[in-house]
Image (cartoon, rainbow, N blue to C red):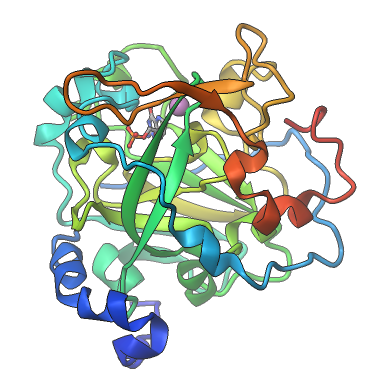
Length: 322
Ligand SMILES: Nc1nc2c(c(=O)[nH]1)N[C@H]1C(S)=C(S)[C@@H](COP(=O)(O)O)O[C@H]1N2
Ligand SMILES: [Mo]
């Protein structure tokens, strides 16, 4: 509706031939695409973006990894999705009934194309890519997941943010009829997250619609979730119903709850301990079906994506702006 349709690109013009040959599988996943809330905006104020942001030219190498992938069964049964309960197995049981189609996203704030946008329109003409990313939860476990998604930048650009859009805020669905967890005061619902606009435009930031070549299961945040692989997993907000461009840093749910424990930036950082545990190592969920966890491994700065993203934070004290 408010989104201009882009002419279909030749798939091979966007990705390598091997991925192109896999396209039918990916399009099958896209076919499974497709409720509303409003985002608030008050302001704790992290520092503004650096004036000239050095862009990483060679992010392509970061789109895959040879590390052992987490089993599909584990990635879809060991979840954090508090709207469906706080136990790791709760979302896979309770989220099955979440209605993910039709779905639209309320776009607002500093942009030329506000409005309620059907998910199909928001993503029309964009071909999901497979990205195998590490995901590091602030709790100290991690997974390796083949996501299907589109660059967040591609979607945000078609909404035409104004020059005043310095941050972007996301809101999850919070429907007590479908989500038993939102009746409990675990968080100040709806779940809210946000990024500085230059972080959001980074090529690694992904809007995800599928995983493992399949549509995204409800417990993993269907039909649309964010994945920001250099940040702790809680930045990866699920079941997104609103996107708002803001001048000031948006309030975010975990930071509101416990600002000393969950920062706005939340970049993975082994040198900054969580107040209640060390972040130096992590338990990788790469078991073989008999056990969930593989051995504990060292946690890497920016979750191993520093070459791509460290430039976004030049001049910032990463211990202070955690
Ligand atoms: N709406 C919403 N999004 C959420 C969460 C949540 O509870 N609610 N949990 C976050 C946390 S803490 C993590 S680690 C990841 C987990 O994603 P996964 O279950 O797909 O592995 O989702 C994030 N996104
Ligand atoms: Mo997490």
